[in-house]
Image (cartoon, rainbow, N blue to C red; front, side, top):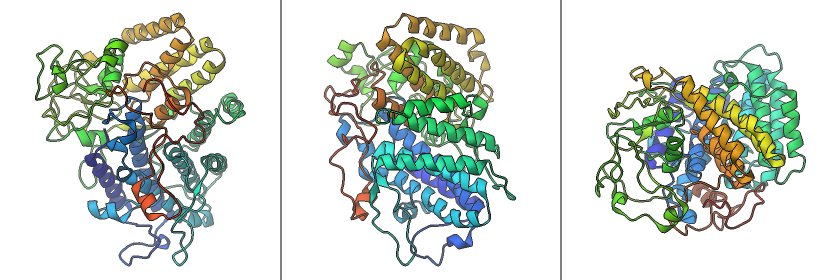
Length: 568
């Protein structure tokens, strides 16, 4: 659930981290005497800003995608009129991607510089000084950022974005086609791979992702290329061959030790470097976000060994389940089950064993449940491990926010390979499915002990993991082709917890899983195929008009215009 608190927290974090470590730089096209100019800064300072803004951008876009595919909770019963996706609420991620917006800067007292603006400012000096690794990190981040903008918004400014000079800036950049931006991103990644392999005299002061392991950066670049090829496979006849060529090379992320992720810390002030989901929910007034009933129920029913890491239950029962309904804290516990939920066999409102969340599209008000609702756990948010203590939460409890933002994981690559296999021979996808599950579980279990106060006797054993994986193995063998697609897709979504970007892309690309809990509204309208352009963009740029609605499909989405995906 995306809200104002979350937005302010992310602005605060991105701005304070940069201000604390490398002073304040506002890359506006007009000169402010109180700000540093690009020529007064250094490539290291710009690169610090780029890397932190990239993690923040990924978190924001993760919420946008995850809400729609039940990896996180969506508040809104009409897809074309969801408050979370109002143009005014999409300004921050847009400004972080391109260039900081003074309106939001003044509201928080801090500055968002913008990934593309910082890359453009860093490039001349990095090139002149032959700082190839600085340049390469910027190229990778630019490629990921621009592809993500295309995936969510469609055609966006690129060739004219952050161009011109102080005297003749391009104030109203035209949009480029999504297809052309994808092509440009692939070229950026090819250039980055070359630059990562070059010798330099001066390394970046900080590499927040791989700590100077340039071989891993090359693997990440190839993995991002694999993701791009897979995302455009519906419009690119050669995409799967290009994908498989990288697989054959072996030079991609295939081990968890090579995962691309951002590590957050525990400091809460000056600067606040905690995981944003932790900062939002481990507060004096309790949790702020709701978690999705579909995902919690799915994992609970399968006894998924990751569930105690993903979710922390503050109580052991939900009103209307093991205890009487309560109109004040959970009004829906007194409401009849909607007919389309009954007909489809979906859970409604309440889950057993204290998993207190919300159904997809539930837009009720906020009751006094900050200390009863289920909150983010130790993975990936750095919260509390669920050891059935039901002690509630407090500021600083659990791992204190020392979580991660996952960006490209080895487990996800296995699911990408499973998708490719499913296209021709569903049965041949099983080894990749099981490998992806295994790597995901192992990564999550590596968070054992991160919450020092938890009773680790509740952590899953190797035997628990074996039983779970064997059950998935058997279910996959017994399923028909559609059932196999659903199992692969469901498990992929579980592994994506903490980053909903690829889930949203996958859902529009494949239409699976068809088993997702539907919107609480029986007729919620057409699914969101792309987001509205942000308000700042359409209000301040005379070269672009607002979209007609959110049914506009991005260039690679050639699936039916209506009634798709079916689990609406």
